[in-house]
Amino acid sequence: MMRVNLLLGGTMAYWSSLWNFLLVTAPFFLVGLILSGILFGLVSFERLRHWLGGEKLSGVIKAALVGIPLPLCSCSVIPAAVTLKKSGAGNGATSSFLISTPETGVDSVLMSYAMMDIPMTILRPISAFISSVVAGAMQIFFNPEPQINFPNLKKKTLAEPRKSWRDMMRFSFVDLLDDMSLWLTLGILAGALVQVVVPDQFFAGADSLLYRLTLLAVCIPLYICASATTPLVASLVMKGMSPGVGLLILLVGPAVNLSNILVLQKHLGKKTVFINVFAISMVALGLSYLTDYLYAFFQWPILFQVETHTHLHDHGEWYEIASAVIMSGLLIYSLFKTQVWNRFKGQTHMHNHDHGDCCDHDHNHDHGKQK
Image (cartoon, rainbow, N blue to C red; front, side, top):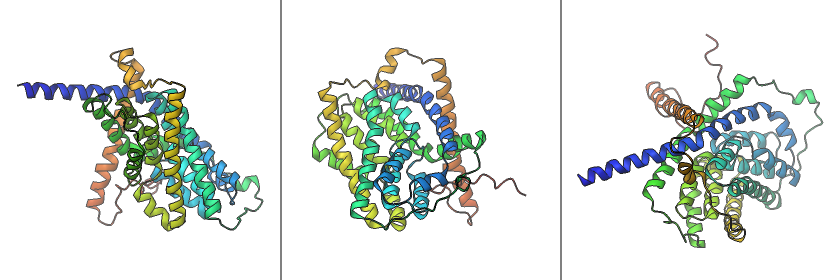
């Protein structure tokens, strides 16, 4: 009987923790999706590749600044980066864009604000900028290419059809959501589980160099998007992990994974990929120590919102509840579509490609218009 009560108590505690995660993140997540769609509508890829052409440090910095707000995950950024490379962008600018884009975005920044404190919300995009610029600069220095210049193109040749509001929202609530739904859901589920299972201060003192190097070795081959790392890292820091170690996970997890390495080495070359992985690892390691130093020097309290949310109000405001329900419905529908229905279609129609791969989403929405 005691075991049954413990099991029921643990189950209720987990669902309560999970619901709390949704209440905190959902409003910012939905706003992030809307802003991502608007940003998608404002970005002209033709202008982007023209802007990043050549092999100069200025192109590396531009690529980093452009990539930081863009809402593309590790899978989505690969075709964009490869296209930039084939269109004339150098190794430096391509690498910078390839690193800064998945490490952070308008959606993950808003989720950072929702679940973490102000210092981490600010340090995360700054760290993404630093790591991407360092990697791009290393490409220019150690892996240079002949100078590539675009011809003087007229403005009208760089123009693209203006994207409609429907196209922008379809990108956010279909394409982008399908890319991140699996890993975002796993991140939220894992974060809620950590809250319930892991004792307080369990990770206190786990900030040695060996510990950080071990995390690097674990994070490099794994795939997890920027938004998905946020709830997991928030829970780990609340259980005693230092903010610097948490930042290391936030930087390395989304930017590097084994599948991306295998794909990119075919298009960019093994040397380019090796420099990127080395630069990300070393910069993330250094910034993790700097972050811990800043928290200690300025005595910043770690006030993560997931921890303090239940003390503010027990049941959530109406907009939080509505957002949590909408977010849950969107994730469930996307998971069913990408992980169940598309895989089922792939099994019943053997001539079709496997739609379950996160890098193979079909972004062409015009198949059903012609009969």
